Length: 278
Image (cartoon, rainbow, N blue to C red; front, side, top):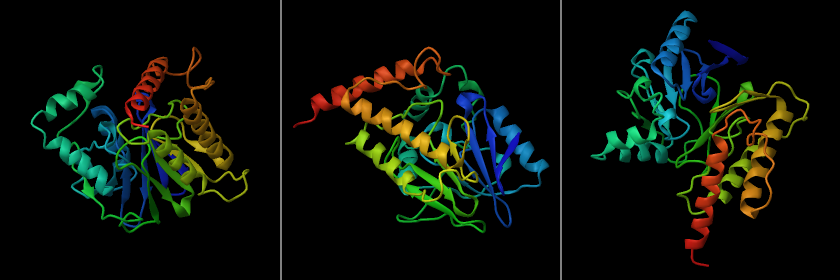
């Protein structure tokens, strides 16, 4: 089901970790951001778009994680944009002789047979420095950063006051750090500062929405700032090695496996610090 979150902006949610696809309506068709996840999800999305008379004219992948570079032939043979760095990362994966085993290792076993890979990762790299999606529709600004994954970028639909955040600012997932980066904690904090700089309006404003890659849509500036603050507290606590009280972790958290991810992530950061020359 397509849920309207702003004028000309809709979200379609998958059951898989509450994954969100964003649809932005333009003059001649729609921009489709991060479509997924299973064959049934993509079928539902294609049916909903057709029923609404929406034709896909472009796509965008916020980053090169497997669940953000999927596609369905019913969306059409249109440009599927990504940052140059994200597109290069996918090209490198697809060029590997062991790409099938690499993908198999990345996919969740319980859904692996339901995820279509025939059009996986066929991305159109945007020129370095591109700051907006090249299409006939509302201005969609590209906000590249180095948090979470190589080539990650958020999208800001200026006229509609919507931020499509990729895999950040989730109410159900903790920050997943890019542990291969030189400074994963600093990169994440820099991206949060970038997001915070977008807001100069009254905190009570109600016509701003943030769409995380996974989780519920955040409504209003106050909620947006609360999510930035929650992610910042997590990253700073991990950096300092202090106590952490995060509602996305613990026995009452919506995803019980996140505690294990948190422990693994902090262990990887400790090893990284130990192996980095002072």
